[in-house]
Length: 143
Image (cartoon, rainbow, N blue to C red):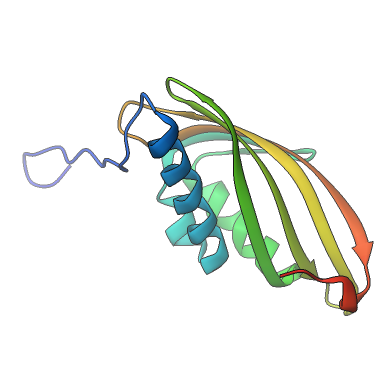
């Protein structure tokens, strides 16, 4: 609420998605996550967003910000690549991989899939991620 006006945030492109706008949405997400800025990333989600990330259940933008802050304090040299897998109306599925090293200098590549659901304003209201980590040698890093 700003004065007597309600400000409705929109995150373009809006659903329903076509191939071009779905790819655009995926690239925007990749760019935001690679910024490693929890506030920037969280602004793409609804205030009451619902996440499942591995075995964690995260609810609301504030919890997303805390989760991401902790994530990037522990996953150093983080670099992510996302790819559109499928889309329909207000839903997008992606496959992704990212690389990082932990505080002990051990490198990992994480593989996974995400299912996204957006509200009418283009904000992600649901994000369900399944992720597996594979220890790799520093010389095996692709990103």
